[in-house]
Length: 89
Image 1: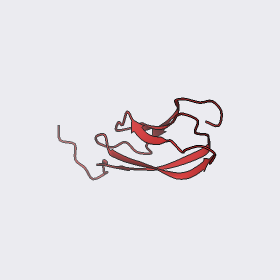
Image 2: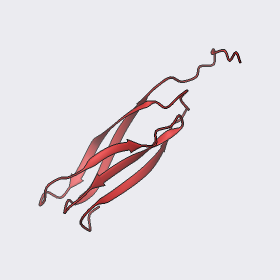
Image 3: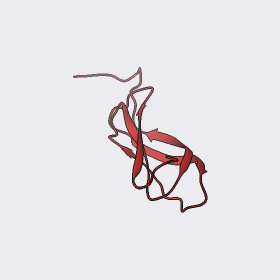
Image 4: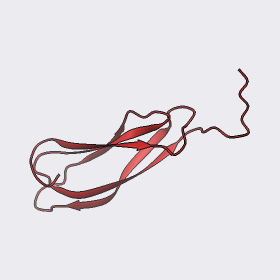
């Protein structure tokens, strides 16, 4: 994201270590920025395609913003199976 101008984005597939019973709520946020300060900082961090097994983390920037590095943290909240659960079907 250091070179070029206009819309640019990166996608990163995240797989949960254990599947949820249904798609969880995912909270995502920036934990590290390494950016050029000669232009305005324009960025969006979001999630896409959240499933029981994982999601896609998306970072977008645009115009003349230059990003050297970015790191995000996320948390997924939802119901998981337990070994004591009964499956009566």
